[in-house]
Length: 260
Length: 362
Image 1 (cartoon, rainbow over the protein chains, first blue to last red):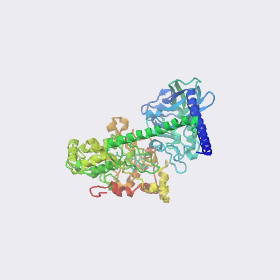
Image 2 (image 1 turned 135 degrees about the horizontal axis):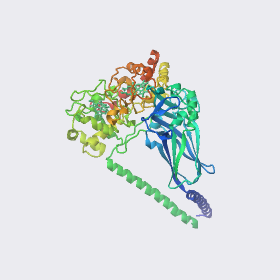
Image 3 (image 1 turned 60 degrees about the vertical axis):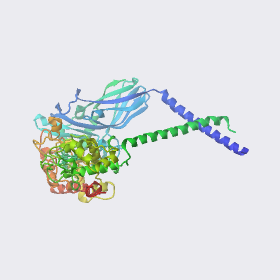
């Protein structure tokens, strides 16, 4: 081997040593970062109520201010961009979109891996789906998502919510159906940004559990009175009805409890 | 010649190499174990286009070519019935989209059941089987008909013994499941594998979705009725499968004779609820509804338009029950039917892979 070759070999080795060192450093940094901040599991749990009492499906008739009584049969809806905000304003995304279904208990509790063990001041989410998700193929192609499709020609996307049941019309004993289906009616942005304050306490280990409450009565009363009889049973094309429900959705969710 | 630092690189490289080696050995071992468990077999992949969700397959019954072929034979073989006259295909005929043209299929002893044989189309995605959903897997479903007195009226013990004695089957079980010991479970598994391959996704509707064809004006008008709240079919028969796979009382009767889901759950609120059937291949699958009460699509549309019966368990989604239905005009009815006819898939009822293997060996 002549000198020249040796020189080249040396420099190659140097380069790889340099690369190696860099890589090792990166790994150390990565591991170090991970090790630096403690993590904890997070569980979001949804409870359902009507006027502060636990929801009873297809059993109980609840009063409305419009003078009817109603019973709940089915309720499915999406919350999306579910995120926690820490006390410094950094946001931690928990889930892109989650489909809740009162008849499928497993859908009402979801865990999302590990989050940094910090103090959080806000839980925020979108009721429904924004344009990036509310389009054809905007959500993963699962049977559950497909059943939520909003296939109206020219609109597309998914229902935000299907709230279905029956009501005793003006308490006359005449039962009628109601179907509060909300979504991107005529491509309106009917989804709702919701932000709930959390007490700024540090998340606990090994699990930080936030239980939300969804008060179904607020869907039709808070603050606008929604009269089933006024809007008829199919409201997918009725932006006026959608707008009322959109306003009400702001007040439907509250923090029920926090288990650190 | 080697520099000092080069020495610590060598072990690093060796460790890397070693782990790659170890990893591949480990992989091979687990692969071999799978092969040993299941006998040698070629696995089979269901090809669906991207609008269809991923096919949910059970872990304990993967699709294999020999498994499907065995299932196909068993599906068409009267050996599964008490007097060897009835096969699954006696009531589930390919030319009727694996349903039956007679209102109530006759079983082995010429006894009529009280329900119309449902079609078997894209059942791989279905979570529940029978009109009342009482079976939760195809494997479980396939066990039922053999001993049902109004279907094949046999005993599994005798059937298994017959299959075991036959000339062809033990070796087919060997190929499919790595054992020539015939059991009721393996019979059901093989049949379920065949049923999962019964895919229909070549209707005009599918071609339009794939951009290979276009709707006529009339079909488009029908589509607009179907997928909006005007005719409002999609809430139950929407999505690419044309069924929500749930249970509803769609208003056929005021007081249903056959109480449907209630028979199985015992809950009053389930009276008159039946599983939503797919609307694919309706041209081949008459008569319609769980009891085959309607002979034509016109009758079905008339029913949804003005023939609904109210009852305490009618589904909330039957929004216009107070008016008798969605009240379509004559023209709208014709448009809707023309759309429904785009869901027919002739390739499904002529596909040789689904046909009787004793008449059409592939």
